[in-house]
Image 1: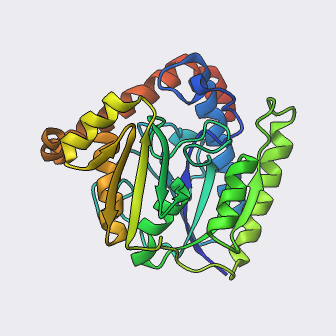
Image 2: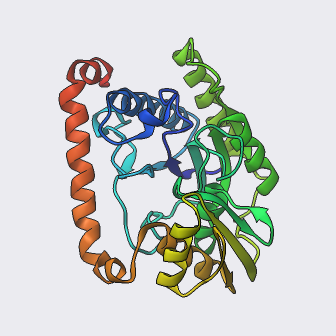
Length: 302
């Protein structure tokens, strides 16, 4: 039985996100989605502890990294908000966790999934050796050297299909995004039961993408944007597609981070810029508290 669990939580596949606006920073829909995402994760965490988990670390991994409300979390859990440079890019420490669960996730760029994207919606698709790459594959691979096994995944049906295809044996729990949930409480109960059941999942192993690999990235904004990115990082380009080769997963992930978020100048400033970005995230969560004070108060565990 897995007893030390890392939860990587996203918002697109959570119970309260039914539009792009609900996944966007500082919108009316986002305020509500943050509360629902928090309640989803709390339900999972409560079930994990009840089933025998000894440690649960929750990593908020959407946009600013500040979407989950600490006051709505199980007090036994550790909530890690914001982003870290190392030891795992974005995630930071894994705190000795032996298994990882992915909640509220989405499908890969170019797929038919709900709000599908990989790292950023600016990518039309990312393919390694001709096969689409999802965030599940990237984040699970980043945990490989720490021996962390991916055992559970929740998201829209397409995201769950991709998860099972890429990591055989992983347990999944779907959320229908064709219309708003009529009974969020019942869905959360099902999510919690499924997550707790996966503590007994012995069918998966630490996962890492196959390398070396040839990577093709389609830039959704077109040829001009692709040319700018390719020139910036000295990469090959044809039309709106950028190409590079990665000999290791670390090379692959490092280049994707550069293409997706950085310039050579901002890369140098990253150690100093990350704390400022995290401060911005905390400010955003303070807006949620102000705009949804009553809703938050009635959901705080007594």
